[in-house]
Amino acid sequence: PAMQYTFVAILGLLAGAALAEEASVTPVQKVIQLIDDMVAKAKQMKQAEAVEFSAFQQFCTDTIANKDAEIKKEKELIDSLAADIAKLDSDITELGDKIGELNKFKDKSGSDLTAAEKQRAKEKADYAEQAQDFSESVDALDRAINVLSKQTYDRKQAAEALLQVSTASGVPDAVQRTVTAFLEMNTGDDYIDQDAPEANAYEFQSGGILDLLKKLRQDFTDKKSEAEKEGMNSAHAYDMLQQDLHDSIEGATSDIADSTEVLQEKKGLRAESTKRLNIATKDYDEDVKYLSDLRVECDEKAKSFKEKQDLRMDELEAMDKAKEILSSDDVLGAAQDHLPAALVQKAGASLAQLRASHSQGAEPGVRRALESFLRSEGRRLKSKSLGMLAQRISTSADPFGKVKRLIEEMITRLIKESGEESEHKGWCD
Image (cartoon, rainbow, N blue to C red):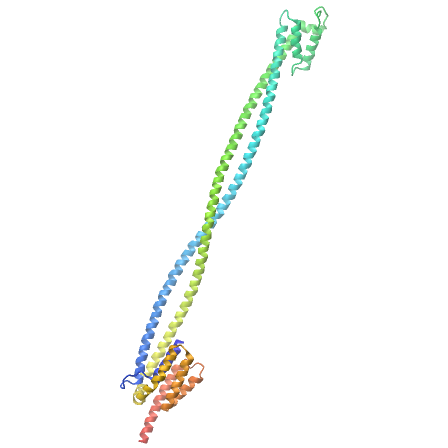
C-alpha cells in the first residue's frame, strides 16, 4: 500500500539521511526538507487525482443524463411504434374481412344476375308463346265473326273458321261444346232443310253464337292486353334488377380494388414500422446496458477515488506528524550534536537498496532492506533502539501499521541514548 511505502521511506530517510551534501546540514534537517518535498508532491498528486476525477464525474453526470433522456425517447418511440403496429394489424384484419365479404357479395350478385337472366329468358319465351296463342285465337274469332255476320255466308268457310275457334288454346269447354254442336248441326249439303235442336237453332237464329264469339273475342283481347302488360312489367323489373346487380358487382369490384390497395399500403407501413421497432428496441437494449455498466463504473471509480483521497490524507497526516516530531527542539538539537556525518555516508548504500526495493513495489524486499539497514546501523552505533526496531520489523505481521509510533519511540530513544553517551564521555574524561 502507498501509505506503508511512505512510512518506510520516512524511516529510511530518518535512519540513513544519505542525501546530505554538506556537513553544515544535519541528516534530520535534510529529512525534514525531503518530507516537505514529499508533502508538496503528495498534495500535487492528490489535486491531480481530484481534477481528473472531477472531469470523469462530470462525464458521468452528463452522459447519464443524456442517456436517460435518450432511453426515455427510445421507450416512447417503442411504445408509439408498438401501438402503430397494433392499429395496423387491426386495420389489416378488418380490411381482409371486408375484402372477403365484398368477394362473397360480388359472387352472390353474379349468381343472382345469372339466375335472373335465365328466369327472364324463360318468362320472355312464355310471354311470347302466350301472346302468340292469344293473337291466333283472336284472329280465328275475328274470321268466324266476320263470316257469320254476313247475311249470306259460305257455310264451309264458316265451318272452318269455327273449327279453328274450337281448337284454339284457352277456349273454355262450354264454348267448345257450343261450337262443336253448331258445326254438327250444320254439316252436309242439306243442313238448311234439317231440323236443328231447338236450343241450338234458337242460339244461331237469334245470333246467340255470334254474341258468344264476340264475348269470347273480347275476353281473349283483354287477356292478350293483360299478358302484354305483364310482359312489359316483367321486362322492366328484370331491367331494374339487372341494372342493380350490375351496379352492385361494379361497386363491389371497385371497393375490392380500393380496399386491396389500402391493405397493401397498410402491410407496407407495418413492415416499415416493424423494422423501425426492431432497430429502436436494439438501440434501447444497448443503451440500457451501457447506462447500467456506466453507473457501475462511475460508482466504482467514485469509491476508488475516495479511497485514494483518504490514503493521500493519511500520508499527509503521517508526514506532517513525522515533520512535527523531527522539528521539535529535542530531536533536532540531539541530531545536530550526536549524529555523526559518517552515518550519512555509511547509510547511503543501504538507503539506495531500500529505495530500489520500494520503486519495484515489492513489500518483502523493502521490509528486508529496512531490517538489514537498521540492524547494521544499530550494531555500528551501538544503538539498542535501532536494534529493537529491526527486531520488531522482522517479527511483526504488519510493521508498517505501527510506523508512526515506532518513529516516535525511535527518536525518543535516540535522544535518550545520545544524552547517556554524553554523560559517559564526560565521566570518562
